[in-house]
Length: 508
Image 1 (tube, rainbow, N blue to C red):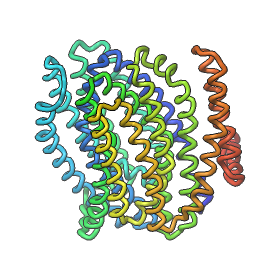
Image 2 (tube, rainbow, N blue to C red):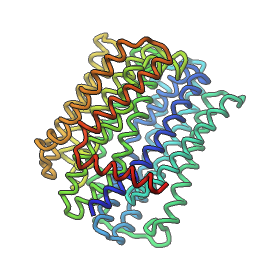
Image 3 (tube, rainbow, N blue to C red):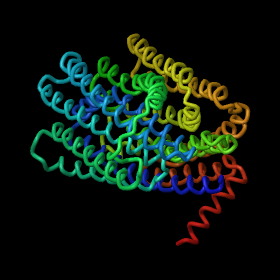
Image 4 (cartoon, rainbow, N blue to C red):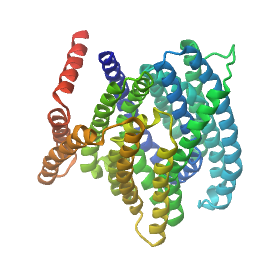
């Protein structure tokens, strides 16, 4: 059983990793062209407007988490009737969420854009236009969430990967269209992103109806007890998602109020880069989510702990492989990518990478915390720390501190949340903190130290320039890979990885 799980996870990881490399290349190129086409000011404006809509992303994020948990749990128990009930109940909840989000955004959101948002007066009508289409885009994405969750719960990551690639390709087409279309670039960009979201949602719906028996509309299933369980799980998760929004989006609006659109654009670039790199580790955790929940549902705690320990290490390593060279060569990368990035973007992006590195090691722990369905203590504790990030950032910005201070606050808070998560999960599922530090934290620390030191030496002694930066990046990746293999992974893991690689080669 565990061997089959490992093979499936390895296959899904390879698929998601390959997908993410392609999407990363498309996304980085897209941001570069969008920045050039829109200009720094319009790019900053769109980031703020999109941030307002994203303030309500906790609605779909919360339900997506709940849907994945309950679908994976039912699959772990091999209960097809519960799957059908879960699908029907979730459709009702998602419809309610979509209506609530639309009403809040078109009332409170429109009021904020009209009365509080700092934008050039001549761009006000354009800002309202893209705000309304951002709302429609968000509502469309909400309806895609339950279908995406079903695909992930079934561990059909190849479908998830292919649809994501189609979405990225459509966004790339938008970039080329923007160059030639005669209308206002910011307006047409918002409208075309809505069309992409609509096409993406329709693809998910068609695939799920065709492939999964629980996704049908001929017979409706109702279960009040299941509804109460989902809402109970969702209610506490909702608080956590709301506070996460403050951690990510409210700070962007805070910087808009205290500084200027160029600082906001620099933060948008930093978070975009960090999020894209972070997807290499978070996508691996997407593959881990169903087997961890299924292991808990079937009572196989030994396999669950194995997945948590190894998953936490590999999640970090997948991110470190990209984060180390990007951190050291950030100035060269941003200047090559964006030509003339805001000066603050270099420091912001480095700090953003540190934040996601700390968070990456916790991703399997977060999944484990959701397995029992008891979210009250976890979400209220972690949510309170998230709120403190916004409050402390507001205080230090009010005191006249530099814009980069908000990243430092987030880094310190993430360290605190990592420790808190360990203690909460220990109480929820019996996870050993001592074993976690021995099997995860110590190998990760060894990899960081033994790969970072020679990398900094290479960075210091080799000259600057594009050619030397490429050479240095090869050294950074080599140092990271060698230390991960011999310090980060145990003998058992190295043998399994070798077997997977040899099997792939033999199949070719």
